[in-house]
Amino acid sequence: MNGENKYCNRNYLNYVDAFDPPTKHFKTCARAFLVGGFICTIGQFFRYMLEFAGLTGDMLAGAVSAMLIFLGTLLTGLGVYDRIGKNAGAGSIVPITGFANSVASPAIEFKTEGYVYGMAAKMFVVAGPILVFGVSAGAAVGLLYFLIGL
Image 1 (cartoon, rainbow, N blue to C red):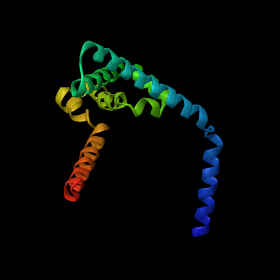
Image 2 (image 1 turned 180 degrees about the horizontal axis):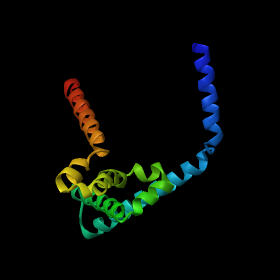
Image 3 (image 1 turned 120 degrees about the vertical axis):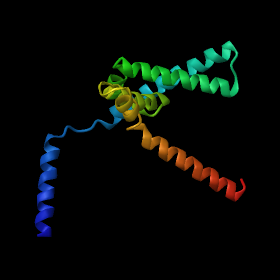
């Protein structure tokens, strides 16, 4: 019976592969690199403009992050960021604008269910686990550094 299952699985995988278009790895990686780099270039432009305006240190970092989050949320609301993500792949997900998109998309999608049960409850469906594991990992590393005495 086990040999039969391996044969069936192999046939099924061959059948699926016949319909699956080949992945263009170089083209996909190049597009992700270019789009991610362009998003980071926009962030660097914001940084230079705010430095020129007189911001420094943590205020500068916070303002640039807030501007990128706003830009990502605005583009998500206008339906542009999804099209960028479809063509750019991970290049649009990795920067902070991708995080803003992952919070705003479910909120927009479930808006018809109301503000509390729709937008507020579903806003962190995608980003919630990221926040939980990010905060947990940060706390664990901080505790480890505290215990080691670094």
